[in-house]
Length: 312
Image (cartoon, rainbow, N blue to C red; front, side, top):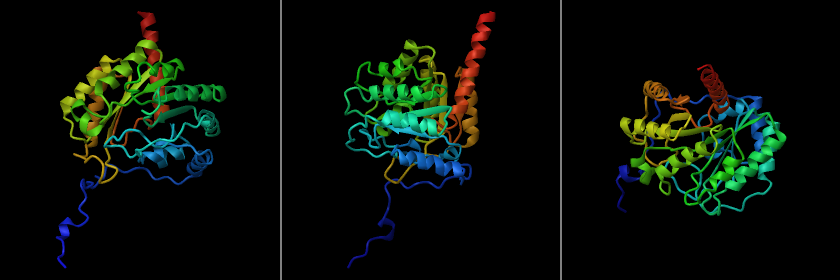
């Protein structure tokens, strides 16, 4: 029997690079964590915290923070960076908006984040389901602010207006990466479709805060990241998140490099100088990480700006 070369046995396509010492998620073991988990599991809800293997899940759930993922756990797209499974989704659960509202109340959330998988199989991409979820949350939690993190609703026309009409406090849609990497990293999506979605939301309702996020470490250049900032600012985006791409498995898009915290801090300074209202930038920054605190900051800054305009 001829033996294979040992270096060719179990040789992964995209080996995962060892994490540097500055990427360490906080591991907390508390009663709040398990109570949060129990509420979510009991209602058979999905969270992006679990489905996308978020590194901050322990910290957030210990603070009774969770990002609900509606319309199932199966995505119709296959983005090369994402750990959410791809396939044929199941039918929508008509009771899901009510369950989300009840869970929001039980968790006593002051700020709730609602995201979803891509549902290209639905005529409106799930826009109506987003709207119903926002409405149900408000019925039972009239003091809770609501943030949505939506798909791009590509080739669905103006269905996104259903979500805007429900008036979430924050409308988030992640740009994810720079245009040159879209075909490899985010196939099935279009960069300027995402930019234009954010622009359109602000044009319809200027009171809604808009938000977007980008990952670093995929092979982008500094100039490309700065151009993304300019594109988002031109679309009147208020809030930018910048985080480190963490390769979920050997089957996912290969990590190019780990970005040092000092570079994240520098990009934050540049983004603020360019004109973003709020910028969160660090290796472990994710779209909904500290979303409640950041929303409070945005609201105070907006109120301060309005007061300054009145004095002028």
